[in-house]
Length: 226
Image (cartoon, rainbow, N blue to C red):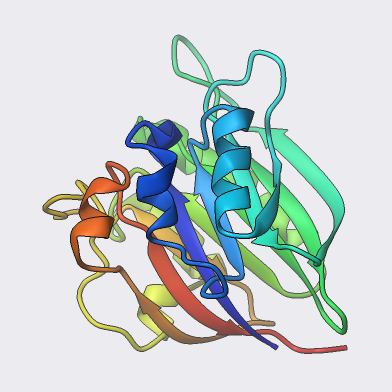
């Protein structure tokens, strides 16, 4: 089964839902793993505009929210929401993991967002990979790591999962931030050993510059049927 997946820090859709939907036209994407998905109303408008449905981490007093947006007609199975450990005045971070089922396949789709402080990110990366170690079958993770590939949390993730940018064909260096002139690769698609990466790229053009403060990352993946 071929999947086209994107990870996207939507910045709460502050730049407008319409600007974001221009990046993800109908029938061109299968999963969008969204960080900072904002209000449920804006998220619902975004999903509806591209003909998709969603599950999210919206809960009382949650601030940094994540979502898995998936093709209409597919079925969400178990949905798990986790808050990553935090201390002092840092905003609580977390992830949402959803088992998404199609006619003859299933994949666990995860949207995650790590913290702003190095030591916190390392701890978060460990908590995330501990969770993923207990997941069976194909796994796709879209994550805003808030750091480049040579930093500690990114290295931890890359030692336990496959970085789609590294393992797939695609142009450029994968930089996503800031969107109008990206110089930092801080947004990633990771997969486990059950998933094959064909391509991975960051879109160019005006739509990618103004839809958010991050550019999305796209990946073409193959997951086993059965």
